[in-house]
Length: 302
Image 1 (cartoon, rainbow, N blue to C red):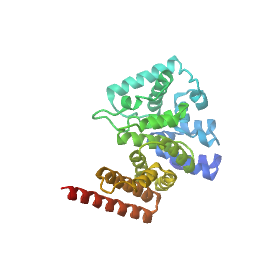
Image 2: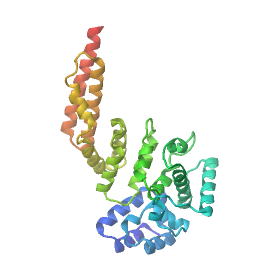
Image 3: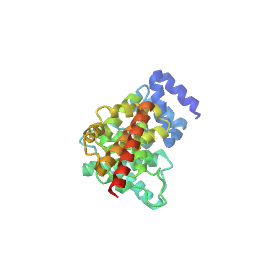
Image 4: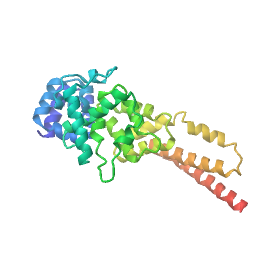
C-alpha cells in the first residue's frame, strides 16, 4: 500500500498536530514504515488503534503483527506479566537465530520477538544492568541489529527511560547513543515531550555524553529538537558552577587551566547547538585564551 494511503488514513482519524508527530515517529524506523505499507497491517492498525495517537507506536504495531490480543498497558505494568509459553519459546528461537546468523531482523515480527527477549530479561532480573554488554554488535555484525527491537521494547516495559539510561552508561560506544535516540524518536509524542524525556535521561550524565546525543540529533536532521534540548540542559548546568569555581583558581595550575579550557569548549558547543552562535564564539575564544595560558605555564616551567 503506498504511503499516501497511510497519510490519508491517519488524516481521517487524527488531528493535524497528532498526524505530524505520529508520521514522524513511524518514518523513524524503516522496518516499521515498510511493514505499515502492507494493507493488511494498516487496516488492522486503523481498526484497533484508530484515533489513539499514543498507540501508533512500534510496540502496539508489534503486538498486532504477533497476533497478541493484550494491550501495551498490560505488558508494561508492574509486576510484569508472563509472556506465555508459546510466545516465550518463539522469542527464544528468534534470539538463538540472531546469535547464529548475526543479521538484523528483516521483518517486524522478528524484531518484536527480539524485543520480547529483552523484556523477559528485565522481568527476570529486575534491572537493565549488563544489557548493553550483552547486545553490543560483535565484529561483522550490523549496528542495526537491535535498533528496531529497542524501539519496540520501549513501549512494553514499565521503565523505558531507565532502559535508555542503561544504553548511555560509562564508555558506551556511539551506536548505543544512536539506539537510544532512535528508540525515543520512534515513539509517537510531540517534540516537547521528546525534549522532556531526553532531559530526564541525560540528567547527571557526563557533559561529553550529553554532547554526543545532542550532536547525533543534529546530524540526523533534528536540529530544532537538539536546540531545544541544549537550551534546557544549559539551565543550571553543573559545568557552569565548575567554571565559576575555577575562575578563582591559581592561574599557574596546569590541571585547573586544562579543566577550565575543556569546560569552556563544551559549554561553547552547547550554546552552538542551542543556536546562540554569539555566546558560543565567546566561550570558544575564552577556551582558546585559557589554552594559551596553559602553554605559557609549561613554557615558563621549562
